[in-house]
Image 1: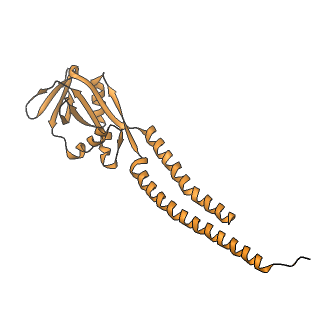
Image 2: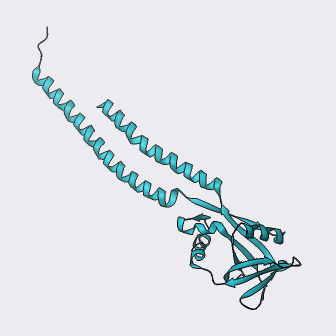
Image 3: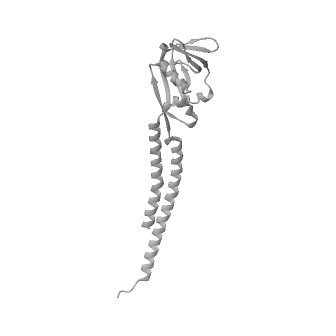
Length: 200
């Protein structure tokens, strides 16, 4: 029977203990760094990744029927003459069905905020810009000013009517991708930590 070298065994046990401790320390440092990165990613996801989108439907015919339908939906109308924007209210179609009568006003602040989303050209809007989903823009280069801030917009002068609506498909896709990414980020360190413990 061979003699047991206790000093050699103790040295190996101490080496194994130090290696195990280093692995645990490195795992702890990894978790701390990972948690910091996770917080940053979650913040970026809330501000950038998890987006809500709108889409623009452009109408170039049947202006009378479309205008009446949108008016009954309590949409707010914006006149875009290529240079300035105006808010239109008290909209009605004239008796011979050839144009629109409306009161012309400066753009209110709550509506003006939605133009920030339009000007970004990303079809993305924030919570404070959600009024864009109620907006209808009438594009024309010719209208007649009447008394008491009233205007008449003939249908023949309208180049298009643009309706801003929520893009559900793109919004749901964005939210789904963000959810999958966050789930993966949460699960990865847990699985890594378990494998590290088993290895140690």
